[in-house]
Length: 413
Image 1 (cartoon, rainbow, N blue to C red):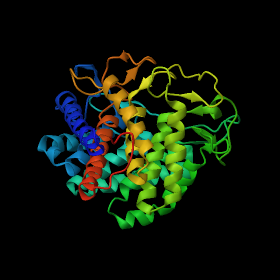
Image 2 (cartoon, rainbow, N blue to C red):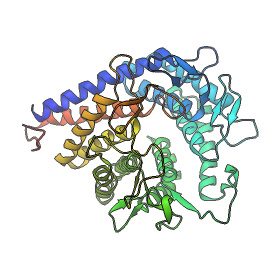
Image 3 (cartoon, rainbow, N blue to C red):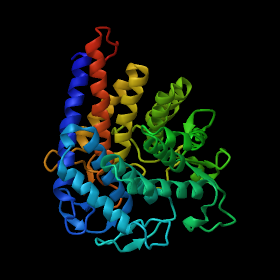
Image 4 (spheres, one colour):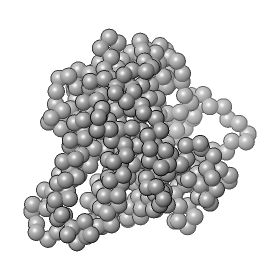
């Protein structure tokens, strides 16, 4: 199979799978009575719990709006109307009360707050939903909500975190957890799309976020650690040794997007070498295939019970990271790694009978949980990956049509 034929095969499979995944959510997740989405769905789409998780509500609104405005086959009234109803559900119910700057983590079907977490992630996905709704509908009230909430979480992260409700305890040193600058960098990217004013406003935050992510390169460049001290040093104990291959690879493609946009070749090289290749090569299970969920940099058994399980989302991040990295570098080994992850993910996670992907496999690659959605898995990682990969592959195919000077690789034969 030639290089071009490989690209075509991958793109076609991504497109077909995206249709099947989105059909699953469109068919089973819409709450026509209260708005918003059911995410606790069984293998065949039955609802096993009607609680609504705010970060998953925001993710699904974002996904629907993004596909509606970016992909012609999803430019459908059904998708737009569901996104708007989801956005209105968030506006009405995301905050436990009118005086709260915090969003709830989970609410009842009709929007009554059940639990609030002392993190920023519900707010982050609320921002993504509101910004995409503004871009899709052109209603300024959504933009105002996104910007107001963004200002609040930047204040919590960079100035005063007391509003999150976390007490300062004498034994807890300040931690730079990679998830925080990653999310802020992603939000800067979201809010700055074709918006020069926003890009200028958040330029300092963009630089700060990149610097904070790069602090996670430790051990003389031989490892990416999930948590470091506030000044970028390795922490003691399990917390400091903790590695999350999927998170590192997601950070890698976040950094790659910045490198490409800024023509920053040094950042691009670091993104590929340290945040994509390094965690993939250490995190891939040589015995059974697939990416470990968690690792200990010194080889101790991680304390997380699910450390050896194969979860859906790290594999989606790897697929994006390898394709984007290849698009930026033309390094054929990245395509070879992409093929390995592609073969594993589509043979293990994808459900040809009911659609969507299983989320949780045993180390050996067997389905551990048959559910398609829950408190952490919704309409986001899988369709985002499929959409982005299809888009990148289409660009690579377009470049193929312009030149006969194709890259050499074991993929091209």
